[in-house]
Length: 216
Image (cartoon, rainbow, N blue to C red):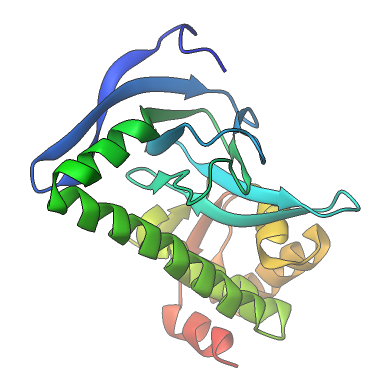
């Protein structure tokens, strides 16, 4: 990935408490790789617009999506020198990338940056725990309901969700097949828990029903 690619612009990652790190804004097309597994972890990233999926591939080539990163999210923080997962743009996406060495220097100079780095690392752990809880649900409908509820506060305009990811993305995040995810959406629509004006546009008609389904 070249820092000289077209339309790059200076930007920052805000660590809070008045701490900002200067970086470079980059644009990525749909499905374009941002970084790959085992590549040097030289940068950290913040999503400006669009969405990012982080993922790994099994030995037989199956894809497992670990998280979806949305505007405002910081990702790519590693404890080792290489990335333990890959990251791709779900749709046309802008990110700010900041050299990891700048964060490390800020953490060594300012206790506020150290706390923020710890908070970001803990957020990664919480994301992993929440994902594990979703995968631990037995039924496909439970997993899909949990997915919609978890991300509804991030995607929603009122009760309407515009999902940036495809059914295939959702399936690989939930450990299901595309067909099973589609059937679960159709069943929720049949029972009036949701409306589906389009495959990416979801209207939450009965949030209580979704909460009961995810807890089943």
